[in-house]
Amino acid sequence: MKSKNIVDKTNIPSSAVGGSTIAAISTAPGVGGIAVIRVSGSEAISVCEHIYKPKNRALSIRSQEGFTLSFGNIFDGTNETVDEVLIAVFKAPHSFTGEDVVEISCHGSRYVQQKILTLLIENGCALAQPGEFTQRAFLNGKMDLLQAEAVADLIASTSAASHKMAMQQMRGGFSTELMQLRTQLLNFVSLIELELDFSEEDVEFANRIQLKTLVETITEHIVKLSNSFSLGNALKNGIPVALVGETNVGKSTLLNVLLNEEKAIVSDIHGTTRDVIEDAVTIQGVCFRFIDTAGIRNTKDKIENMGIERTYQKIEQASIVLWILDCTELSEHIEWLTSKIEERAAGKKIILVFNKIDKIALEERAILKQLFSQFEGERIYISAKNKLNLQTLEKALLRAARLPEIEPGDVVVNNIRHYEALQKALAAIQRVSEGLESGISSEFLSQDIRECLNYIGEITGHISNHEILGNIFGKFCIGK
Image (tube, rainbow, N blue to C red; front, side, top):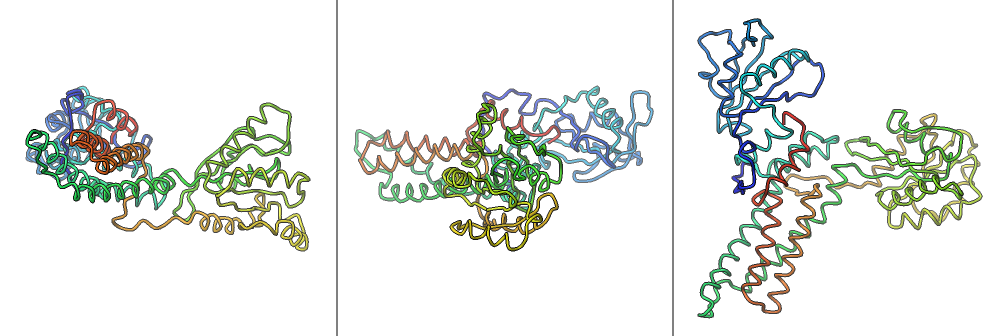
């Protein structure tokens, strides 16, 4: 979906709007078979002509049609060949940025990449800032701000679910829904403000019954979008899973096995983990963010107690709690520990994980079941050290996650900026609803509707400023 933006550019420097021609390496840093260097701006073609000679002498870059390739050589100032390359040309406005764009596909040598980039800069290009290509696409109306942010989400996606969500937003599903709400509100606020022009004649152009129906519909939509944030955040950043239990029950060992790397220190000494350690792993297309926490026990060590307090905080923040117990040595403080975990993990999915199962007999497992007969959650028996029954644990995690499938057309909010703007828009539209009930004047109704429109406009980028844009695009990688 391509959407035209009405962006306030008064606070945006002319260079950010596209005053200069920019260049950057768009592929990931390092050595590879192929690297791509992107050039965008009004002088993109002429700059590249200074350093490129096509094999077919009759076909210059300038005469090359858009969406076509040519093969030739990059030369330095002494006419020495730097590399054989492919040149792709995209002519304005039919390009990603809306400007003339040239993409140079060269060999992936670090030297070659830097040499070509240096030649471009020497011939008049400026080095692109992080996200500047996408920022120009936004400013030139090739996409709205939601879609631009979805580009960053797509690049950062680590699971099938986060990829699908980013693709949905890039296609403009969220934008379309917000634009429909915005258009309807604009129509009504225009009529209400028309009433103010005829205030002395006591006329009413905006039907209050229709406006009330619209406000109820918009409130319902905003609430639905806001409520989707918990799912969107989980899909984007991973479902937080806290590994909790007493010291030396195998939490750090299990974390290392799940991540397939030595992330946490494993030791027989009690209280080794004193800070929170976390990392993410994808299981069958779902990203889980595992959090190894300090062992819970009674201790007089101030530093360890600080770690234990952080454990409680992480339990409260987690969606799933893996409560890990040592099968070979159940603590005498098990009742105290149970009350602590259940208090902090109220309402969350708790999976009871009996570790070191390889060290006990089958009849002892039956005793464990009896001891925890009151526990209503799932019980898993594993050996983290020997990687026993880990697939069973993974299946339990997937069941506990219970993430719904994102269907075509579903709109899921996954950005904290969007969520906060929606919350403010919701507060404004609720004031409109209250104002209609109390019969306040058109002037105050108009003010609250305008405020709601402003917050919706902040999400799509219809109302923006350089500070917000700089913060958003500054998080992109260079070359995108």
